[in-house]
Image 1: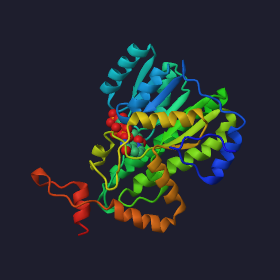
Image 2 (image 1 turned 135 degrees about the vertical axis):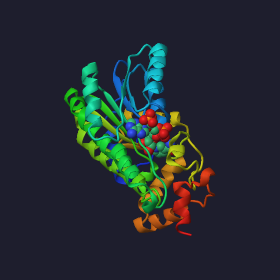
Image 3 (image 1 turned 60 degrees about the horizontal axis):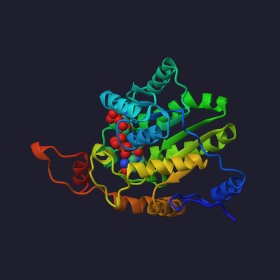
Image 4 (image 1 turned 120 degrees about the vertical axis):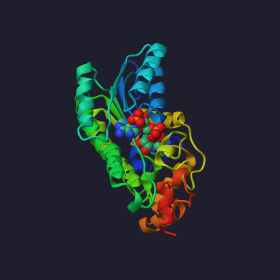
Length: 310
Ligand SMILES: NC(=O)c1ccc[n+]([C@@H]2O[C@H](COP(=O)([O-])OP(=O)(O)OC[C@H]3O[C@@H](n4cnc5c(N)ncnc54)[C@H](OP(=O)(O)O)[C@@H]3O)[C@@H](O)[C@H]2O)c1
């Protein structure tokens, strides 16, 4: 008999079998109070929601993003409201060596990081050849390189203490090739693969690693992407619901979690389908819409991308 499982989360069959088997032995709840979480991308969206929810659970925080003023205001509000310690480490994680600099700052602050939330991330959208190479390079630096570097920096001490957690924010974009978001989809597939590998390597050493895979969620992500709406976005989730799903997975020592029943079902189906077929289906779905000229004669990247093919 399998252990109870949240229907919002999806697991592949072999993994489900292995997990259910193990979970019958024990589910260790995760204790938050008095520990410290470092959250990247804490100035908005999921990162800000993580900060609110973890502070309410008694965690001290290290908040990381570029917007220093926003982080300082959030740190002050949360420490007043919950009586926790909240430090701010401003950083541009697209820069080479930024993660090491963040680690050095936490050492100076004398803060041991118990939970690392690798959340900061950006996307790009449009025909690959029309997207600025430096923007896509920055996307890889942030979504992949900084995430790996931060994990390298903070995980060894967790393993030594035999206690720790890493939540890597991926996406349902991880489960299939994603035409017109090729780099974004590949970066998020990397995060799932990387996280699952570490989940198995380190669970015996008391470190829980989770890949959190949200679907479309109401944050600034799509505005920054340059598209307020993507085709087939469906119902938007709230950042708080996504964070709660991630924390449940952490508590239950699960390797990954997909937010929302529909997203979970979609991830399962696409994962089981032939890759080339999935790429073709998603190419149809994701094709950038035709857009009118923007004021001042400019056209958005999406508009240029779609027009250049018509
Ligand atoms: N929203 C969705 O529908 C959705 C779905 C699936 C996955 N995701 C993933 O969720 C994560 C968080 O996104 P979100 O939806 O919360 O979007 P968001 O509201 O735009 O937040 C992005 C965060 O990343 C930070 N950030 C961006 N560039 C950075 C840089 N170079 N260095 C340091 N921090 C940087 C931003 O802060 P600053 O600008 O202050 O630096 C901000 O705090 C991303 O990894 C994204 O891929 C989002």
